[in-house]
Image (cartoon, rainbow, N blue to C red):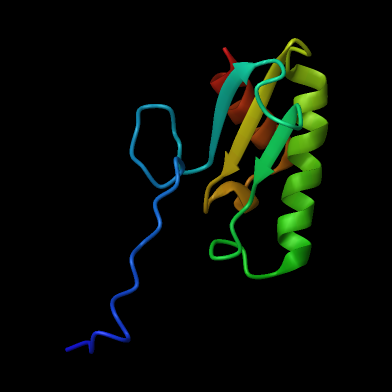
Length: 102
C-alpha cells in the first residue's frame, strides 16, 4: 500500500495516448485560429516517451520542416509526437502528418 505522502503516480494522458481513428499513437495535430497561441507551431515531444535528448530534438526538427512545407500559414498548430513517431522515416512521418492536416 501507499502512504498518504507517497501517493500514486497518475498516468498523464496526452492526445497521443488516447485511442482515436486517426493513428494517434504516432502523431496528433491540433489546428487553431491564428493568434490563439504565442507561437504558430508548438511541438510536444515527451521526455517519458523519448529518453534521449538527441531523439527528441531530431523528431522536433523533422516535424518543424514538414509543417513548414505542408501547413497553412493562416493557422496555428500544436503537434504531439507519440511513442512510435521516432521509428518512422522522414517520408513516413510526412505522410502521417499530411493525413492529419487534411
